[in-house]
Image (tube, rainbow, N blue to C red; front, side):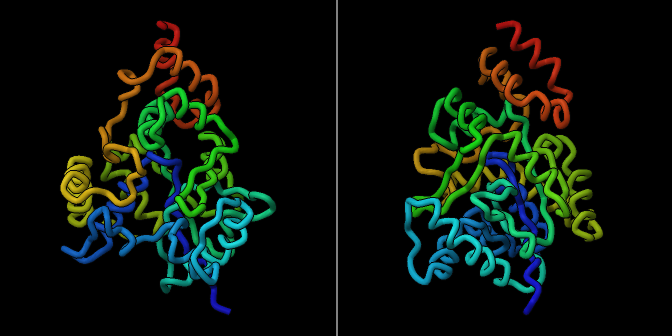
Length: 288
């Protein structure tokens, strides 16, 4: 039996830079002029919510409101995804790396490694709210919900859970080769950040290719693509997927009470991954 440990997961909580990362890697690895636009990223990567793989794994169209049916078909669909290309390849996921109802959502027997992208929860909250067509308080509530899920109209799920548990599940997954990328570091020091990522992938960075890939996938260029072509992955009800692409927008978009809620909910994770925000958010929360 062939070894199906081929998937390199591109994992993140929603609105943490997954589309940006997929686009950047496509522009780096694909031949000049052949990198797909944002609506054709499946030419380079795939995702664990692909309807066609679930249909094939199900032996017919998959459409069910039941989590049990999703869990029944998911292992077969992931095996088909793993075997869809020779060698290692990238697969997007928003699922936690946990056992759910006795089943590994990220099966070790199909996994070669993972790139985990995280974004500070203060900026994430307003972006996630737009993604969910919800107000910010509701988005924060969902980020704090250990049972949070989202999915497609046909019942293919993303088991999100809490923001901090999502991070922990990937960072602490035993035996998983992983590389962590902060959204904020991609904004401020993209060349250095991507070089570290390429070295994790055992790829010697090419400076010229890297510069072109970073330029091609600037937020301005990705937003322009959405304006001209639309974006098929944009959830219904969401006006634009690429809104601001900045760090620090929370200062204008969150109230002191909302900042305090996020700090209280996620303080240990903030201390580990975003210590530079601790004092400012503490003062901001108190000022309210």
